[in-house]
Image 1 (cartoon, one colour):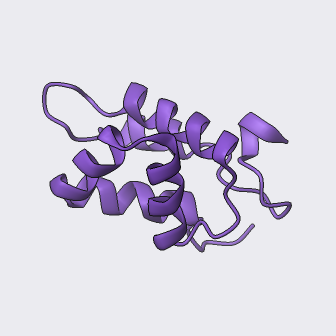
Image 2: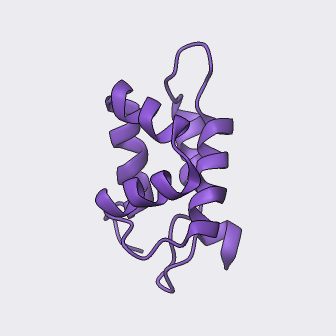
Length: 92
């Protein structure tokens, strides 16, 4: 298993470290969110996958602090994107 972070994990880190980007991602339309994902390394993401990912992010980010706990980050990153380009535990 590789120690390299998946595109999804990197996106989560960027969102967690950049409140403005996180707000943009969470308030975007599905089409805007898919474009944002592509800009941040998830080049092959489809609209359906982007919608699922955005929903998962909304459920994962803590509404009070806007931050991810280590457990939340691990849960959200679980599976990651597979070699086939789909989202691990959601699409494979």
